[in-house]
Image 1 (cartoon, rainbow, N blue to C red):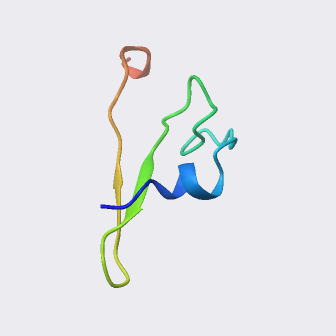
Image 2 (spheres, rainbow, N blue to C red; image 1 turned 90 degrees about the vertical axis):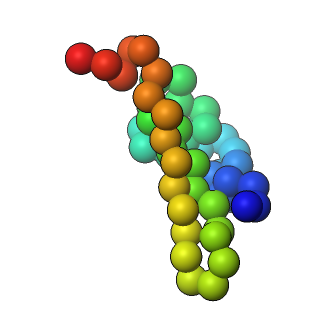
Length: 50
């Protein structure tokens, strides 16, 4: 797959969901997966647990 869209188009983004620069955010990574498809991944950190 390609580089994450967030890293390409908003490397300094602070969005809670997908911002690479939000230390406590979810930091969701989405990538083009061919055609019109986009695939997103997320790995929980310890501080995201209840």
